[in-house]
Image (cartoon, rainbow, N blue to C red):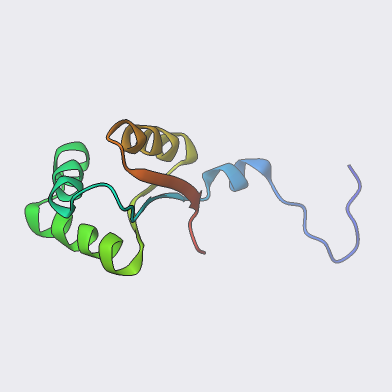
Length: 94
C-alpha cells in the first residue's frame, strides 16, 4: 500500500484499541429509581454512583456508563436494551 505524502499510515490495530463508551439516554418510560437499580445491579455501581449517573441521564439527557473496547460496549448496550433502557455506543472522545 502506497503512502500519500503528508498522510500518516493508520494501523488498524490502533483503531480497534481506541476506547468506546456505552451511553444511556433519557426516556419517557422508565422511573429514575429503576434506572438507578439497573446501574447498581448490572454494572455493580455503588448507590451514590448509580444515583449520580441516573441524575445525569435525567437532567442532561444522557450519561456515559461504561468505557472499554467495542465488543464489551456492544454487550453493555444489548444488556441495557434487555432492561428496557435506551442505550447506544460511540467512540470515546480523544
